[in-house]
Length: 266
Image (cartoon, rainbow, N blue to C red; front, top):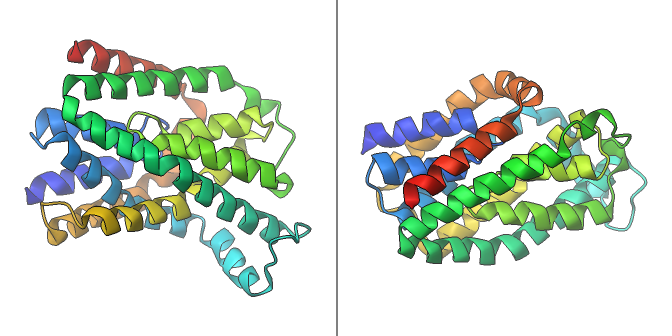
């Protein structure tokens, strides 16, 4: 299983930066090709995000370093400074991601008991993600808001939206970037905000999953090596794949993957 988990880490390192649901596609790959049961595949997919989480931390290190420096003077009600506004946004978005994401994740775990129905739901979620991205379209060229304009309302709404991605097939980056475009943020700010808010949310999800279930049955060494693989590939590929994600209509791929998944489950 060691080779398989490293391969999964490599796949995670690549597709995390594309709005096609890395979690959904990893679960489909594990169940279809590696014979891992659906519930275990769901847990493994969450843990493999650790590597790409560290990659995102390094990629956005200047922003996170500025936020850390601002923490001693942070006040929840003080929204004047950029760092204060961003910290408040991250706190609220992470909180509401947990409030929405926990029951969604439990729903996903329950759905794993139903085999083909679970696959059909993943396919439907991919199709939903594709449709949302298609609707967002070229709004990034029309957006007038930047990361400096972020508000408390944005934190609440984006947290709810991000929480939906706890179900495999709903792309976290795809749905949050699209929603930020709907909120009239420009494309560059939407991309940056989406990945900034992923870091505390993924960290909280992994802590919560560990508290609930512990490490997956395949063992801690395998998980660590899988995360290491996702980190190495993630840090190498992040810049290139984020550029590709900006220029290529990934919603088409979401629809195709979703349709294939639904049809194969029938």
